[in-house]
Length: 154
Image (tube, rainbow, N blue to C red; front, side, top):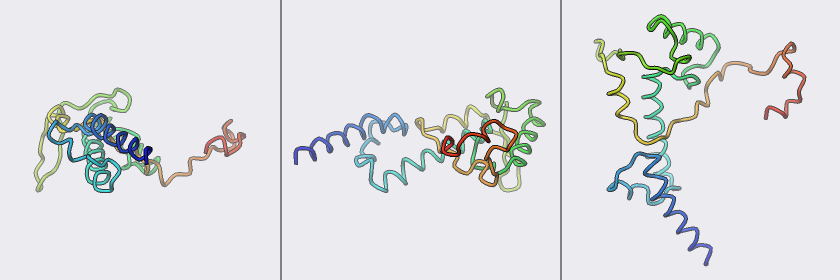
């Protein structure tokens, strides 16, 4: 029973110390994450924040890797599109364009990237699990990695 008390104290400490920083919560919002391991907190707050932040960074910086790129051809197309718009790729330089263009109701909407970045909450982003999901990324026979055991890469 004593261990249960220690675990409870640890859970509360994590919720009140780590949660606000990672999620970008303010003083009055800390009660939203009272139980950091329940499904509602994880899905509705933690993952929703990560997804929102990821979309903002993708819109502003066109980050790679990301879940929108499933093949080498899509990667080349994305890189070429940004190079055409900016004269260089943001992947190489890590910079944002001067303005963001998006389509809303058939009209082009122009947004300041810094304004868009103000919407980022905390530090969470989603890991791009679908990046290059349609590609066979195993090394080919003329690469030195081909001769290493497959367990090295798992």
